[in-house]
Amino acid sequence: MLTIRRTRILRGPNIWAPVPVIVLDVEIGELEARLSQETPIFFERLIALVPSLRDSRDLVLQPQGGLRRLLLDRLALALQQLARTRVDAMQWNRAVGAELTDAQTQPAREPGLYRVVYAYDHAEVGVAAGSLAVRLLNHLVCDS
Image (cartoon, rainbow, N blue to C red; front, side, top):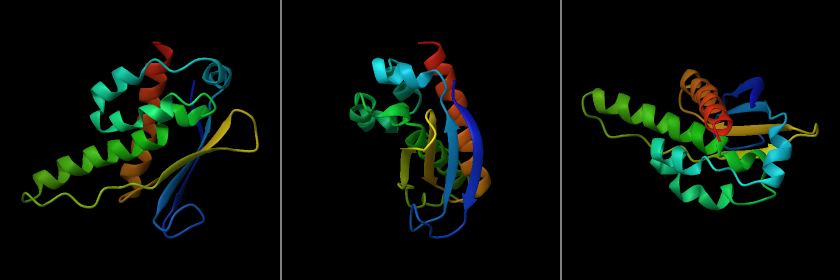
């Protein structure tokens, strides 16, 4: 199961990106062994919920990808974009802002721990998107 150990909000340019980002330290426990031995089978259910992730299939199929294979960073971006689209559409039919694109997942020094970094426009929405992404992936992976 995925567990967020720590959440940091970086409000300006930083070592990961020239834009504000959220940094999650995510522990994956027994999923570490599973991800090195099997391809996640939740992808079709995930893209049914979040179609914008369809182009990420190649990442899911990389055997050395670790947590990157679960698309947590991209899912957090996609959830924020969905929220922004809804809010912008409700506010005087304004055009949707620029798409958030900065995201990366890297293994930390400790085995089974990953650093997930993704851009945000509003810190509260970004943190909520990361938390929701972890909950959704836990549901999809545990049901597999």
